[in-house]
Image 1 (cartoon, rainbow, N blue to C red):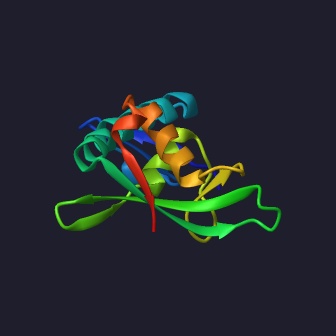
Image 2 (image 1 turned 45 degrees about the vertical axis):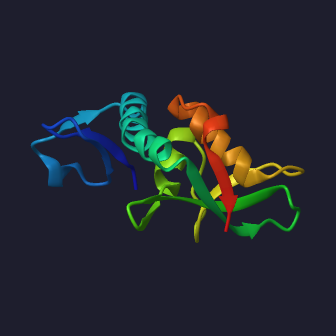
Length: 135
């Protein structure tokens, strides 16, 4: 089933499979929707990462070949863990795994660090100011 990007009157961009449910929203092209949603997510999570200064990663699965991993990302805001994986996958253009985490390709290095530093770079944050920790 085809997915559509839509923009609400408040400016929020979201994906839906049924545009009939959102008659008051504007339909966007796929390229424009992805671009606006990515910018929206960066604007939302960049302050969380800057404030927390530490992003936690959980390696959920390693492929049989060892060439990719499924990784979940979290930050702590207040006293609660906030799930970043969905936002991070959209920002980085990486795929979500069917079960848990986003699919991160590569091996031979700390892949949680790679994921966090890539996310920081995409959000305009110096990766040296943010720590990554594997849980």
